[in-house]
Amino acid sequence: MSSRALAFAAVLVLGASGGAGLGCAHPNFFPGTTILRTEENQQIFDTLEQYRSRLTQRNVDGLLVLASERYREDSGTPRSDDDYGYQGLREVLKTRLSRVKSIWYEIELRDIHFDEVTHFADIDVFLNGSFELASEGGDRYRRVNDYHRFVLAREGEKWKFISGM
Image 1 (spheres, helix red, strand yellow):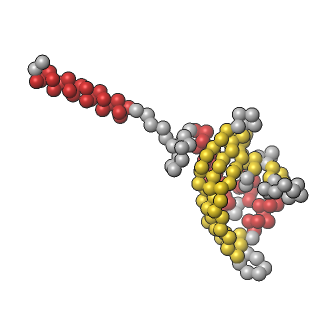
Image 2 (cartoon, rainbow, N blue to C red):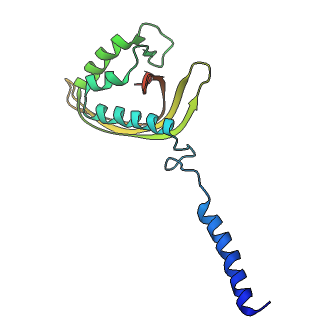
Image 3 (cartoon, one colour):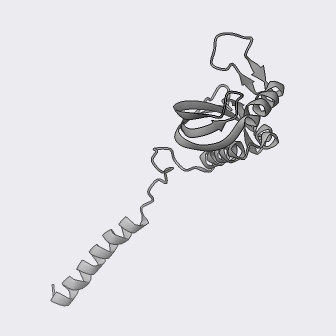
């Protein structure tokens, strides 16, 4: 084989392997996670960002738009006297957010689980934030650094909170 033919063959082989490497599709993940950036996952992520933004703005009506009318909260206790639904959520948000003087809040996405039976999405996050609360005894500061779970359900074209707000 002539040197010219050998050089041409080498270019073909290198070009084919280099082109194959460029054409490979790599999965697109949310930063710092192994969660694929699918259209559905992006919609959930956008809903969490709307929640975070409206919470920091202390926008009660905006937060209620994100909640399902099926919303239920058990407050993390076995008692039933502190449980509430969608109607109670308005009062809880108004009462708690009226005391907030300043707020800084981040939501770090950790995992998304889809329940094939309930059609809910369990969203595991890490919350990082600080609040300045007005109180009769003087302003207080509170830090939040903890794992949390939001439960969302698709209602029409939107994802709505079922619990966790």
